[in-house]
Image (cartoon, rainbow, N blue to C red; front, side):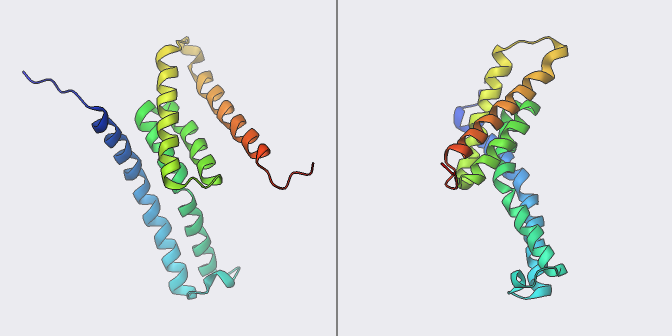
Length: 158
């Protein structure tokens, strides 16, 4: 009888495909908004502030800006289930802010997902305190992000 053994490469592929499948609807919706904005307002739609085509173009741009956080969150969710989603979203946002791009978001999602998976596996809390672990993780990631942004801030007034 043959065992169903999943290799590491198959597992990585599964998590990547989950992230990509979550990302596709966002890309389509944002792309449609950008296309409608340019069809209705022309190619110089960015100069016509306050109009509906300009707003559609802006919404599409904001949607495209969510691609990195979403793929990071989806990969973390695929690995660690619900507790991985919010930290993955935060790390994905951080990756977008420091311009690591799509690859950085994917690596961040894997890092967060497996970190949360290890925390879930080795830290046992009573059922009544399970929600606190996720909140603590979110605050830790947000704190690291804040300190990083503070440390690399070029506008700091020393």
